[in-house]
Image (spheres, rainbow over the protein chains, first blue to last red):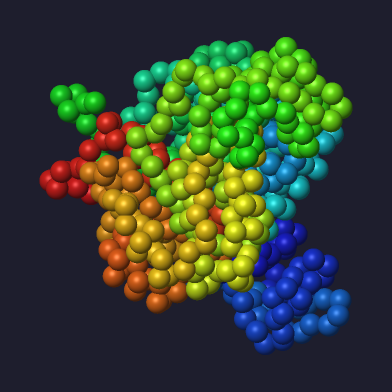
Length: 256
Length: 256
């Protein structure tokens, strides 16, 4: 079930010498030895067959050949825009969203994010989250690593969501009459899911979302923590989209 | 958002002296002081109003009165039957399932559970998971603590699921043509969700589930880890049930 992800520095050469963490993973965790073949992914989600040529205490040499099989790609592409929660929680969301095949993760410096990030920290944080995603990919066997953007601010939301059909923000109170089935009935599948941090969204943010024509979604009476709400929303939307051939909206005369 | 959960030893008396962790939580974490009122839950999910009468360095005295408001109870009652994963992962599932309002959690000693539990450990484990659920309840404000059963074995499955309308087991490969919308269209809402541990279900288990008329559900191409699959399944089923007034199955002539 585990998958090896080739290092981001790999640029397509057929022979590669792995050291450090990757060498350790192959030799100590997977306990592979010369002659063994194993599947791998590059950071764009392409699949390769690798064969171990030699291995010593410091490094592993592998031969890499492209697999012919194409990665099955879901028709729908979810972007998860997440008010950045505290460290461990963000890691958990990145890990679980990666397993679920979320295509893009957008860390959002929202009003109630308790994390203070300076622009100088952005790239370091992004690298950390990319590493968490690569590890999740290795464990789950999911094919496609998510794109992880640099943290964005309020003024970046409009541009970041420009290519999406629909952006849904998840709120503790029902703000309208919209059900997920109704909002997702005629979509091409490029959906943004906007999840608040621990403290939810500010009044100013709700006004901004409204001006950008984002739709409000209510997840029921339960008060979910940020990291639970993120995976809950992904599951809800993916399930409805995956089964879109099976359901239709009730016609008004049958409506509840 | 936080809620105080009264100790399980509380048996309804109006005046209560709290010590230890509960005293610490009220005095140091919430920083309450005499005269302050705060809401609380008992371990059956009933709501109370508490008022702090006095507080010293060792203990807090409170007066407890029932609230008149009734806890809104979801129409559907989910039982999560979970092949026990390793320690931290089970805690995470209990925590997140509690937030989501799952009504019953059934730890299942499945063939591929990597945890070795002797009957002598059962009650200690159950107590630990109940504690995790109480803590999740305090953080999320969800009203109703789940019932957490003692770990069960294969021979107990039939009796444990007898009062459920439908039991769905989640499998890595599509075993049939069933969509969740189809399986959930005419349910009274008493649903069992059966999730495997890290290694999935054994062939013998799949045969047992079939003989018990459990239905197989496929969560898409992604390979989810056990703790992600559990919350994913809860979200998928709750969303479809919560919106059951909005959708209907496509009639055959419209079917995909």
